[in-house]
Length: 154
Ligand code: FES
Figure 1 (cartoon, rainbow, N blue to C red):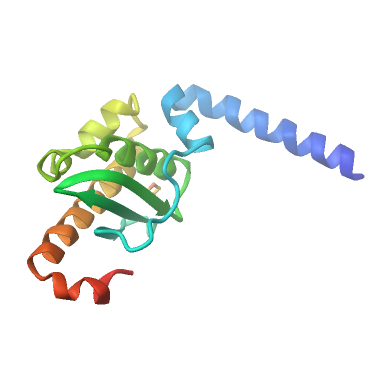
Figure 2: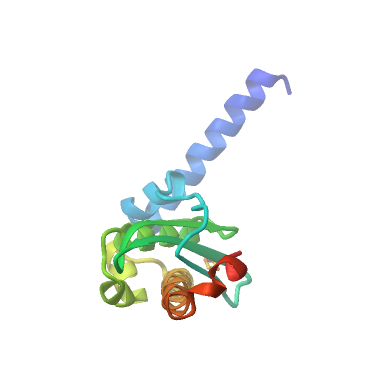
């Protein structure tokens, strides 16, 4: 196969995969799957959480926090498309929230904002919520024992 034919074949294949995915996933999920928001690290985050699910996928959450309010939330994952969508959504929801408000970002809220996920993918939303909570707990622990901060992040 020459390069041009190979490129066209791959483009067509990708278009077919996306077309099939549109029958199963909402527009919001597909959009974040293809173009996730906040997919990056933060240097020296005030809160950092890392959780691995039963499926062995991992989500890491990074928080920049000023006066107990999240001013930046980002994530990394080695997971699949729905994990990307859940990580994107949880960090979008966390922006500008106080710590108390962010603790209320649950699996159900992430699912609602994504307009649902298939039953077998709902655990991706749980993983994203758990990773955020781990980052919030990390922030609170660092606040109590701030001398530890330089030693325990990533
Ligand atoms: Fe495991 Fe999404 S498939 S977290």
